Image 1 (tube, rainbow, N blue to C red):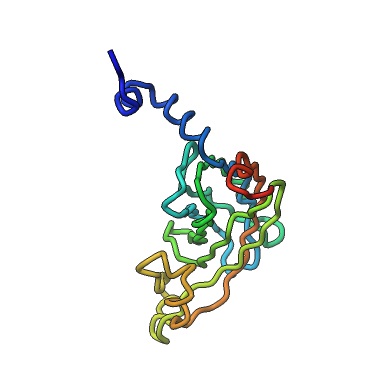
Image 2: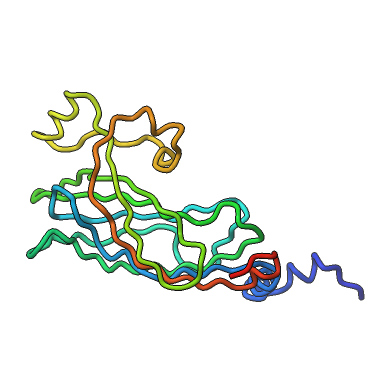
Length: 199
């Protein structure tokens, strides 16, 4: 009996399929942590994060998004999260290199959450350990929205997350600078030499 490649691929386990795909593709393994944040006006902070890639990238293991715990600094202004990030990608091209999207929120004594800043940074493209500082910003809105934010809380938020890294949409916004999110990322690159990329 003759079996075609398609029928063999359907009968093999998912683990075997992943191994076959990664053998033919370049791999990026990102291991690190969101260490914390400094420079924000509020103190009880947490961070929502997500990683975005191009269409040629496949996430083999890890989660694409997450959220840290709330930290209220007792000494100094650094909110410590030490939130782990462990991502393993396979790709056939460099286009759409991974980038981290960050949203920093504060929580008041009543449990209400308020946006403190948006930010993004590209995952470094060289192997090794990297210390990254990601500046953040938030939309200001009208003077009425700013007044409401000061007394009631809340404030304007982006409808579409793409505006965080798209300069075409962001230039029209009135924004205020936020604090800085500190990250530590380690990168392992594999099989990029097959595509003419020296690591």
